[in-house]
Structure formats: structure tokens, C-alpha cells
Length: 321
Image (cartoon, rainbow, N blue to C red):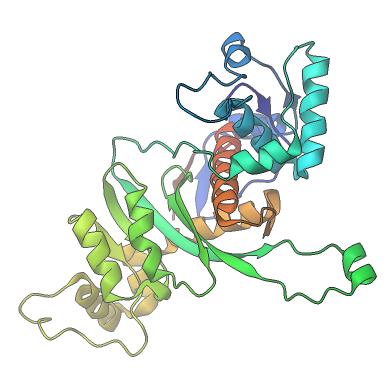
């Protein structure tokens, strides 16, 4: 991206059972989030305008880079589209750059089809932590409700996140209607992860056969760490060919649920809950766009924003107890 814009944000503080090993770098990274530095590289200036089309249709004025830059600034500073247009114009004026400014209608229209690059997976197997949360759809403002008496029920959609337990980065995301259950999105989330998966950890909502099947089809060697329900029973082949779920039930019967959590590493799932809390604190708890395509772009850009903020200041810590 051609710019760097960091607002002051809080970050997840490690639990007391961990010891931070780079406090100085971590502290410097947190201070860096309060700085504001914006620059355009010569390559970004050259790529600001879109290349001419070779096929039929109107010629676009702005490249995908320009649209993504504007929408990223909008996410960071929680701006409306017209405010984003004004911010881009003022930045270009301060930098003495003679570049056109995409208007708010162009930003809205291009957001419908903008392709946001997915996070790149590393070469080492990732430990996926998954969870979901609700995002409200922004409805009529208070002034409109008072003037026109709008009584529309506040709608919301479900955001599904998959986080890398080792880096804290969001590696996959999905946005669904509120009627979709968590287990049905395991396949789409795994399809977004290009590299190998070492384990898949989720809460009790993922205790379903199709979840185990979806993980086994894509990553046969991956461990599925999901707490069985309270009334769960072993499978018919538990004695001869036990499944991973059967192994969880056996461990719970021997050590209890607390012992199973310590043995399986289920406690690491709290990190994805921290990512969700960070999302709502930094990005917000709602969706500003109204159509499905624009909302998918909004979510993808928000995930990229959080990942880049995390790179500025993330503690390195080791478990001591």
C-alpha cells in the first residue's frame, strides 16, 4: 500500500501466565500507533490512475490501488464516504500531488467488485482459532427517525473469523446472514487458507460431524479441538477405531473438562475472542455498506487493517506456568 496511517489503538495484553520478552519494542510499537505518517511512493503515484481497458465498456478513472487506499483510510478513521473523499483531497493537497480524487459514489460503486488480496499463509502449519460475532447494519440516523418516524428493525449479519494462534493475524473471514450457523462456514474459512493447517480449535458450536469431515477432507493430519457437548456419547466404533471426538470424550471422562482443556490446548481459543474484541473496538460493531458485495469488501479491508496494526506492536512472550 502507498501510505501509512496509524491511529492510537489499544492491544491485547498477554495473560499473567506469560512473560513478555520484548517490552521495549512492544512499547515503541504502541507509541507508533499514535503517529500519523502519510506518503506516496513514485510507483503508487504512477499506479493511481487506472490503465485503459482493452475491451468494451467505459474507461475507469482510478486503479484498484486508489480505491483500496481510500477505503482503508475510511476504515481506520471511521469516516463516511464523503468525508473520505475530503480526507484524500486534503492529503493530496498537502503532498502537492496533482492526482484526481475519487468521489464518494465511485468509492461505493467500485467497492462492490473490488478484489482485496487475501492474507498470505506461511510455510509452517498454522493453528487456526475460529469464532463468530454479530455486526449491526447501520440504519436510519436519529434525525431521520425523529423526522420520518422510521421504525425499521435493526438488522445484523454474522462475521466468522479464523486467526493464526502463533501470529495473531486474521487469516480468513466470512460474512453470512444471521440464520447461518457457525459449523457451515468451516469449509469456506479453510478454503481461504493456502498453507497447511496443524489444528482447528473452536467452541462447542463446532461440535458437529460435518465440521470434523470438512477439516479431514482438506487437512487429514490436522487436530480438531472442539469441546463435546455435555450429553455427547462415544461413536459405535469407539473401541476399535476411535475418532478424535472419542479421544476428547475419553480425556474428559478421565481428567474432567478443565483437565481436557489444559491437555488439548483449548485455552488458546481466547486469542480469537481478543481479535473480535479488537475488531469492535477499532473498526466498530457495525457495517456501513448496505449490499452484500460491498460488505464483503468492507470486512476484507478491516481484517487487513487489523493485521497491519498488529505488526506495529505485538509482544513476544513465553509461557512460564
